[in-house]
Image (cartoon, rainbow, N blue to C red; front, side, top):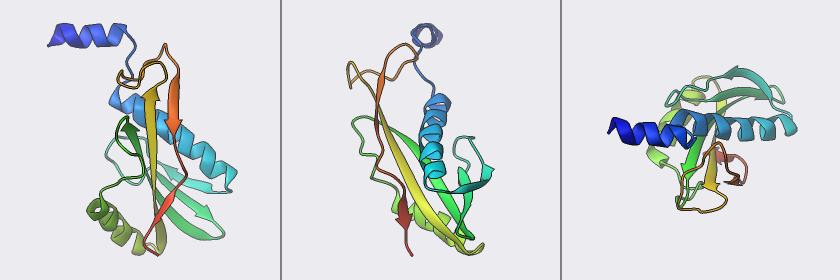
Length: 130
């Protein structure tokens, strides 16, 4: 097992944390363009929300997920997102999901690496409830 791990690392395969950080960068740039002001940013895996933002004097919680091909980045765990929404309501915040699909540009069946180009499938944030 450790030999396989070593081989993967020498090939530059992005770790789960690196994929998450890449997805956060993509979403963060989009949020900036939309005029969101960052109040808190959390890049730790499985620590939600990733972004707490203000826009038009309203608080927004944004959950970011890096999704590997062939999974659909628009699909999300509704029960989990509802639990985040309930938490956000305590702060009078709106809740959003941002799924970022990532794939190796040369071969979708291969992992995303540091040495090769990648393709992004991101269609913006999706509001959960209202």
